[in-house]
Length: 498
Ligand code: MN
Image (tube, rainbow, N blue to C red; front, top):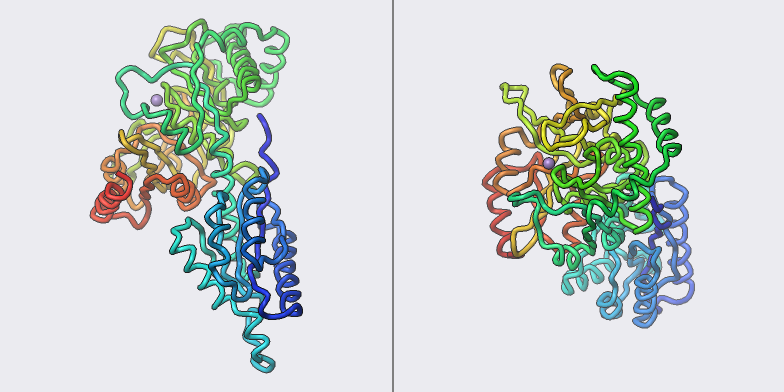
């Protein structure tokens, strides 16, 4: 799995030459101090790069175009320290193609009551200059995130850091390559979609190979390599053999080790970041990829089942956006399976045939090899666990025929009331916001799928801002949702994007 680029963000300060050299020296030193403070704070997931003050049309245009061409630059942060006439920014802004944050701050926190004079006022007038700048951004309908407040304020810093995650999602989205080794499950609607439009909108490349192309890589895995990996499994996981004897169980597990190694070699060699399988199209594979896919997801690959390339790409996008996050709790594909409808205990049991990412596991992970009760293969080995408690988001990207809609549901994960000793797959259990009934009614009205891309580690805003940057409708289902306003949102979405 290739590591992410070392992304950086540029800090651009606006001014003009009307105030004299001394003032411009102060402007430059102030913005340098802010950038130094940010970089030393440990709050930002990426480095911020200070750039010389922008005071002319030519320099603004040149700097923005340098940002466009720098593959490591994931976004620009702009701040008008003094007044910077906004006509100077028009051409540069027109050409800028990186995510933009408008940072509305000022160097001093307090008005210096005893010393303040007109020189101070001219030098520290972002309240004035940033309005001129924001006006032209609004007039030009330039998408941006606006953060308001003193630069030392923790909340302000957190908002900028949060935007960086979205910016990296925007930067990485256009590099996502999905490998499909099966087509869509017969007759299923929601997993279908327009792959050309997905490439135009999101930059995703979605290619199909025959399952036997990749199966060759599996059968070529040496016994030695497979056994080494099986030993690792035996060390790391609890083996829940059931009524299988040692040798039979190990043989089942080894098949998944071969799949993990073979699939990863194929993905790496051909530079794919996500994979799609289908239980009904397994070619020469002896088992449905279960444990193998679970571990690949944990390594950062996206995954979608039954031909679902949209979920595979979304899981990969979430993996990329949350890579390196401190105390991350995990990201996985999940599927709405069955309900608990007991009043006061309502929730949705999330699972899949096998393929849930162990990054979301809470505590011990076991390995089982049980019949699938579908298809005609060996009992596939799979990792079994239950998911962590806590808040998360479940996302569904659907194709409405003429456009995409991204639905983001805020959910609260809890433990099920009782253990489920006979359930041979990993699972999560959650209740959507604002409550079970409104959350699910909203999901159904919005047309959300049964497969979702789920994470504990992004906010709805972070993912929603990615969707907005892609130019698609984003529907939020959260603590503020009520059915009447949701319907109004969908009508508005239709009139804007339809
Ligand atoms: Mn499924």
